[in-house]
Image (cartoon, rainbow, N blue to C red):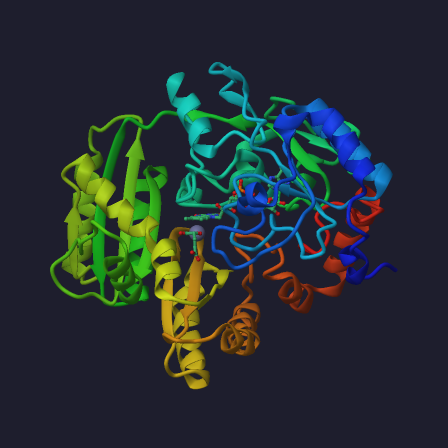
Length: 481
Ligand code: FAD
Ligand code: 2HG
Ligand code: ZN
């Protein structure tokens, strides 16, 4: 049986003949060989990983992508797919060998078709998520995937990581928003699975293999996405609460009253809010007092009528029963934007505040408060000075339970502590039946962690799938597996 080490082999640096052949396919506009121009493609948004490459290749369409992959297949050249390079797990950064080609998909940015009657949109992999959202609005439809990085991440990257975001509660993960996929296989053949069907039971559903595969099974070149009715009504509020339990009860209350109209329920601890107020300009606390936990809640519907009343009555009941300590219902678009700016500023604030160990965990919602209590205590027993930045998509049971290290922590100190702090958090998550990777993927950040926790049979099945599709281990080696 092949082992994970097989997937991390680094062949020698690309031969000039390879460069010549790839240049013949993509031309000057599609090849970056200059070291300075390559720099942004060789590190990630967090600045945590750094790699080398001889070539950044930027194909313009599926045919070019297929020709590039065929050449890489023939020459045994490893390929790192890259979209907007906003991933949080180091999946799109090449290794240090210089032998891996970076295949950046940003020039494949056409919206191929929009069908408002079928409620579908076909986009190439390099289309920015924000552009997909915009194209849907132009035909009075809605594409619900929404992330803080939507202005720079691509639909291909969203598919490859099965991204989550702030609307999963109502619309599901990226996986739930895709009807069909086109992909270039590791040998350069094109699989056209661009079916715009809501029902298709003709055997194994291959699209789901590629969704969440993080560039390790092939290159996603296009997808048929589901569109939804455009929400014309929206009601948003900021809630302060004394405990995570209260927010979880508030979530149940608002779901019971609002049903599908509850589209977002985002949580942040007071430490997370303080970090944003300290590090992100033009932000201010939405409520006057201090609260241990905060939630940003949003209702949406195809009409405004009744929505404000629904939210106000729900929050009124929460105030009366003590689930909420204070609330601020947004009275304007500007106020709504200010609330969201705080929520979406947490990642940036963390980068500015110092070194952090990220956790992206999922648990049944009913276990979240117990988890946080136990994890807080266990972490502080190991490292009393940590600042726990606990926030996330409470409505999905997904916490970004990040650990901000004390100021002045060196890279060496961080590295020395990472394993033991990960063990505290991930052992507890696993013990409670949760996942150590909810929405950011495995990449290189959690590869060893996944290996540590994944049941042997599941891991073996994954390796068999990898072997079947990519027997030469050329697709994003060193990531995920
Ligand atoms: P990249 O970072 O370029 O690549 C990610 C992975 O996908 C890599 O393994 C890469 O090899 C692979 N890949 C990329 N394109 C292709 C392709 N066409 N074919 C095959 N493989 C490919 N994520 C969430 O899930 N929820 C959030 O709420 C969220 N918020 C974020 C907020 C901020 C401020 C930032 C910076 C990131 C956030 N992310 C979030 C993480 C990130 O934006 C998502 O993972 C996103 O889906 C990555 O898209 P990308 O185009 O940037 O992919
Ligand atoms: C979010 O929900 C993102 O804001 C980023 O998934 C989380 O910075 C993080 O850890
Ligand atoms: Zn998130």
